[in-house]
Length: 410
Image (cartoon, rainbow, N blue to C red; front, side, top):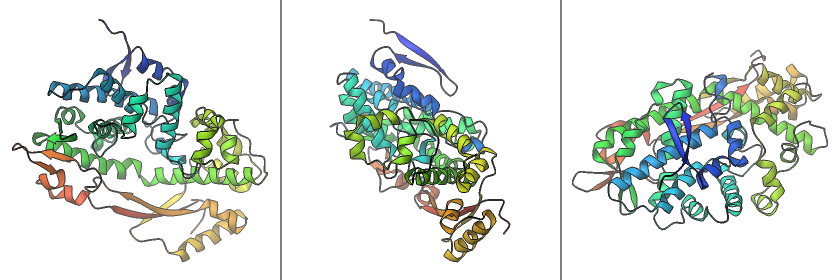
């Protein structure tokens, strides 16, 4: 029987086929189409002008790679039913469906305490109701509740399809060539041993390159200091807007964004009130940009200053340190901000931010990447590799930051 498919032309992999039926119905659903309006890398475009790709791009790319991986495992003799094949592809297609505007940037300010993975589960459950239970197995795989656990490892682990796609894709669109990984070779080296995902020994150098690429991409792109400064400004903007909205000050924005400024919803509220999820599934980057443009003329000096700086790309100056920032330094700058902008002490705290960021390319204690040696033995890649830098990558590198308006003379 001939299966009808729809073709998407992807700049990274070429043509991607999505079959009619559940996969294409999901892609065509408004919840999934929303991902076209959410950029993959938040405000990284302010550093890398080409970083304009979306969560939609990434989800389709991951769907494609999952298909290649499952075909390869079938070729090696592993029994994977058509139902398991489709459910695994659907799990990776929907793994980011719960992302809010600007991806990770607003995850902890717009809805404090609620991770995007939890929102993905709630949206997938809603879709499952609409598709009359067609996503039952998809949800079990996504939640690691299916008895064949290697399917979940393909969706979420230290060597999952998600990472294989976003490293390739983010490297492509930012132009940071150091992030390029040999995803095709890694997929061809995948094996299953005792329900665990392993990599054949001859693929070990591709894994070493994968881990090194991930480490470099974090420092050069995801944790680039200018991108971090921009994201902190946006987070502070949302926090200020939420404060004003919850104290009775009018803060103009879209009807989809407004409830999230006025409330800090819990996951239980989201589960029990369908309207909250409906609003969330309408939110995208445009709601935030329109709000920022509107707020740049707001009477509140803190909110308008932050928004104007973001629009004009007058980003915070950011200082990195291997040691925690001294409280005296934070207070000194906060006092200067207060005088410079002629605002109160508690208002000045929105125009400064400090914290830490960590980078660990590989965590051997968290679902290790296993290498299958030629004699059949299974070893953690850190033990199997003859390169000492794999062990070095296991070390968590922590940097502390302090950022404040550039217009402040220090």
